[in-house]
Each structure stands twice: as C-alpha cells, then as structure tokens.
Image 1 (cartoon, helix red, strand yellow):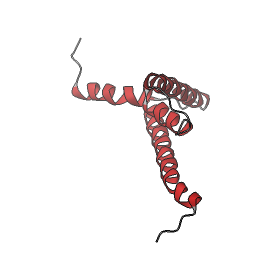
Image 2 (cartoon, one colour; image 1 turned 135 degrees about the horizontal axis):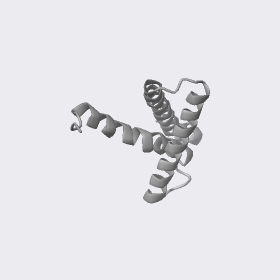
Image 3 (cartoon, one colour; image 1 turned 90 degrees about the vertical axis):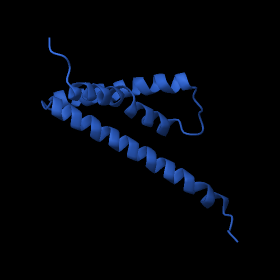
Length: 108
C-alpha cells in the first residue's frame, strides 16, 4: 500500500470541514441570529446536522438527475457553500444598516 500523497491529504483536509461543518454553520447563523443565543455545543451539533442534511439532499438531487460524479459533488458543495456564505454576509450587512433606519435619528 503506497503512502498518501500531499494532494490526497490536502483533499481530505479541505473536504471534511466543507462536508461536515461550513454549510451548516453559516445556515445556523442565518436562522438563529441575535434573537436566539445558542451555546457552543448546540451550535456545533446543529451545524454538523444541518451540513449532513444539506449534503444528503444535494446527493439525492444529483442521483435523481443521474449526474452523481465526484466532480459534480465537489463543484456542487463548493457552490452551495459559497451561496450560503454569501447569504450570511448579506444578512449581516442588512442587519447593520437597519438600526440607523429604524431609529430615525438624524445625524448632526
């Protein structure tokens, strides 16, 4: 059995957080913004479970369309994570600008 190459190890290091944590973390951050404060263990568990759910639904969609390949799975998960992160950033940006509009205070 040959030792693992650097690229194989790098692929695992990139894949594990992308698969098990990133999409769920940002989705949980969008869903539970400031009104619900979650403990660290709750947010971690929710992030892992949401990520697994997203991955399963995406895999089922690829299988249904008969497009289930490694490349499609990689591209899809990276794209889906990018969309979720962009939504998180958009929600954060809109929340920062809302209090100034709501208060109606005029700057002097």
